[in-house]
Length: 322
Length: 68
Image 1 (tube, rainbow over the protein chains, first blue to last red):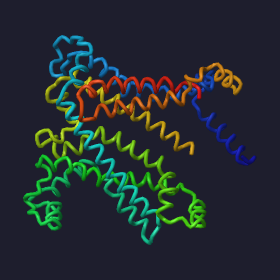
Image 2 (image 1 turned 90 degrees about the horizontal axis):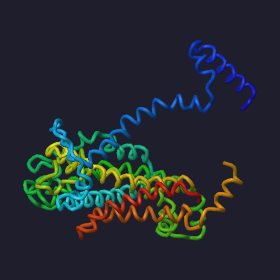
Image 3 (image 1 turned 45 degrees about the horizontal axis):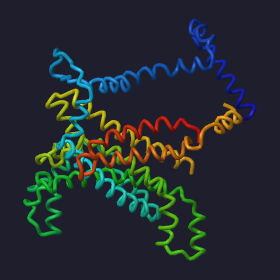
Image 4 (image 1 turned 120 degrees about the horizontal axis):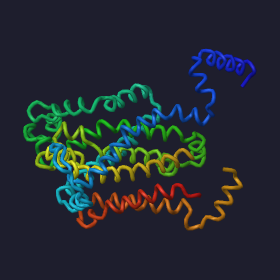
């Protein structure tokens, strides 16, 4: 820092000190740096405790009781681990978990594959690549409520564009393509919408990974007459892998909690074919009003997401240390 | 904490209790629990998935405070 810069900073500090009201200045004067730091972060910490930590502890407490939110005057009994035992032995919840796994697996596989391919193409820096990057990013910027509603129209067998497009390529009548009411097609309808919406996000992370690879490595590979295919397998993929893993973990955590899109598109139906864990949780909590039971279910899902988040942080640290 | 203190602490710390390997075991347990939670093959695996994930997560939180 130059002398002129430090003198400007000194003058600013003096001006700020002079502007501080006398009673406040008198109170703060005796505080150490650590005391001041605590003074600044205490409001935020209190807010976080009130809106994050307290509900979590309350949910943990409720998960050991038979509490029902629609019967607040009923005596709350401690049921020990029975809520957990019932959830972890319940076939219906197990099936909901499998529906979640099917959704998470296919969305991540498709988003990673398409996202990386798009990033690889955009990274070639062809003419107009900035425009196409913006166009590709549009779905990600839309609200899930809007996306859910307009895809419902697109999937309409009578008037939906999707059914007509599929009909054009396959020759099947559009009225037979019932994406949201067919047991076999409904899970794929949600996977298609989620992939359409969130592939740009994966593409952005992969693009950051590809742009972080120094050019001289490719130049050295060119000198060694390595083919493009060889460069992709030996340089691009290994060096972009931490970023791809980051995208996979991040989308995994998000899709595991997916609620809005499923609720808007199918509401868990037809039957319970698209009933993912979050939809089951909502039904238990706000339709059957089994608050204690649903709190235990929420804690199980929380531990799963928290565990994944730990892995996510570890991978993030590895990426940072590269 | 000075470099000398850290070195001293690391010197006394048993090799098998160092962070790297224990963190990897914890991550393995979390991953295993996650797979058990979602697999479609055996209900018994699903039943024990939560406890596996919980042990992995608690272990990760504890061992991430251990020295390298």
